[in-house]
Length: 398
Image (cartoon, rainbow, N blue to C red; front, side, top):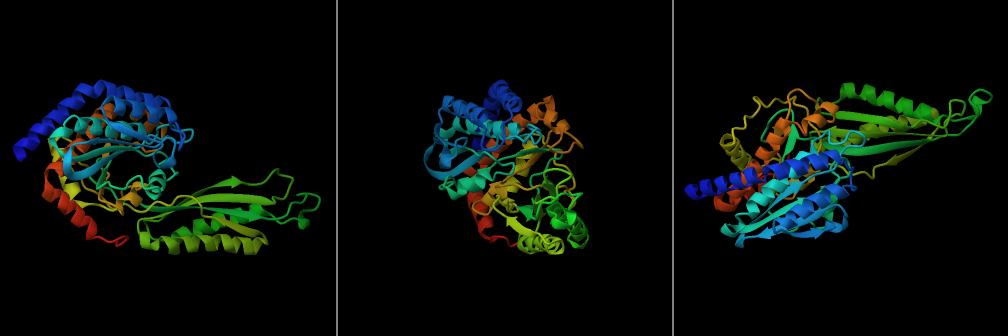
């Protein structure tokens, strides 16, 4: 089997090399046309047309979402169904400062490479377009609509400033506090007003103080979205939005209660009424899969990708809607460095996403994902180990 596996990996590598100019062109197009969550029309259509050109059957509007898609190419009967997940949404105002143009194109390249040899494989390859990762919870909503039904394993990558086969993520829940008071003239009759902005400020300060008594992995950060109408009017309405994060999924509800109590106390102290909005998508912490991670490590070696040593506990962690999917099926989400010591969600990282190094790593990422999928297609024992590892770690047993 090893000889055959090596042969097919060489074919995959050659296919991506032959297609490299087009993949770079697509990555640059997505980068130059940044579209925020659920508005990624140009990006999704570009990816869809390229998949159709490469003999994928594409379901558009997957799950009822206009910028989502589900492309499929089938091999021989039997074998696993493996999906490459393609993200392509941008950040508001910042464009592709998280490098999703690389994510979307790397998964496209991996899918095209596997499709080129699919008749030699048992199983099915998918490329699934997943919009709205940046706060919109696209994968979560697509899960709810059954888009991932029938998929055995999902793979994707993320550009970063370091290289890891796996990096933990933080569970996150967005929450908004809206305070209602009473308007009055701020100079002539302030005693007749009830200041909602005071409640927001007290909430903000109380949460800042709360951080001193919380575990080190917790992150709570927010913005004031409404402070009132004018300086000479006591604010009748004020609001603040937070993202509440923790590595420990089991602790999230308790943490949210602590944060809510800060707002409740502020409402009591100021005489305002409090409205709590928790309608936003919450992201679960990501679940690792050791057999797939080990396969990725071996493919790192084949591709001369050097992992950043060592993986430290204090490595900066974000939150991913891939986390929710990882508790439904085995998943992998390696991080590949396209720059050094440059923060994500920065102008510098945005430029790195279309740099020479960014392009080179995008092409290596396409090969990495395709190689790992090929391992899973051809090695039944690896596939079974991946499924067993997933079963051995029940939901939120962290």
